[in-house]
Length: 351
Image (cartoon, rainbow, N blue to C red):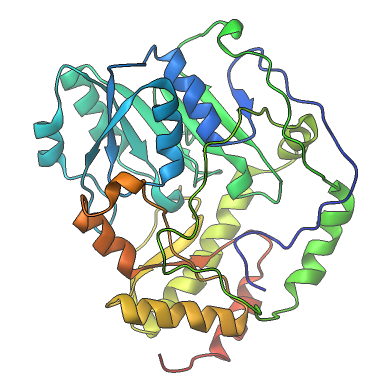
C-alpha cells in the first residue's frame, strides 16, 4: 500500500531509555510536547496570546491550552500564505508571538514573518513539523525562529521523535527529565522489510473517515521524551537525501493530479522543500470524497488534513472551505518514483 510512512511492524523488545535533554536541540516524543516547553522558554503563559494560522491542527493548540496561552487565529490563502492585512488588525498588547507553519514541508517566507515580529516586538514560533530535511538559508528548517519544532516521526519510519530548537541559550533545568514513551521497536529487521512490503499494493478493507472533522480528535498527551534508540537511528539519516527523494515523488504526483483535473496547492515547490505530501484541491467536497474512495480501492492513502480545534466549528468558514476540498497524496522516501508512475498510469480511471 502507498501509505504516508513505510509499513513497519514493531517487535516486542522494549527500549525504555529516554534521551537526556541537557541542551538545545531538545528532544521529545512529539512536537506538541516540544512546543509546550518552548512556550515556557519564551516565558509565555496565562494572559498571553499567540497569533496562529486558522488552518491548523488541534494538536498544536493543546500545549497552548495547557500553559494558559490563548490562540488568536489569522486567515491564510489557498496556498497557505498569511493574509498580512488581517494580521495587522489582530495585534494587541496581549499578543506576544506568531506561529509560522511550513505547511506540508514547503518553506514559508521567513523574512516576511520576521518583519512583522520586528514591527510588533513578537516572538517567532517556527512550526516545521512537516518538513524534516528542509533547508532555509543554509540551515535546517526549524532553526529560523526564536523557537522551532521539527517532527521526525512524520517523515521517518520511527514510533516517536521530535526536536525543539531554541535560538537563545537556555538552562538545561528548563526541561525536566521526562520518561520515554512506552513503545515497541525493531530496527534492523524493519528496515530490511520496507522494500519488500512496498512492492505490494493491497487495497484497504476499511477506510478511515477522512470526510469527518470528528474522526481523528485526540486528547492531550502526557509529556514524553524521545527514545535514545530513536535518536540514534535519526543520526544515521541524511536529511538532504530524504528531501531530494521526496521532491522526486512529489513531481510524479504533481503530474498525475493535474492530468486528473485537480489543482495542486502550489504551481511548484522550491529545491529546498522537503514535501510531506502533495496537497491538491478538488472542485468540491463530492469530488474530494470520490478520491478518498479511489485511494481505498487501490491501496493509496489519500487523506484529509487537519483536524481543526473544536472552537473552529462555524467560526472559520474559509478554513473549513479549504479543508472540504483539500486532498493529500502520500509521499515517503522508500517509494520508487518509476514504480509509482507505472502504478498510477495503470489506474487512470475517470472520477
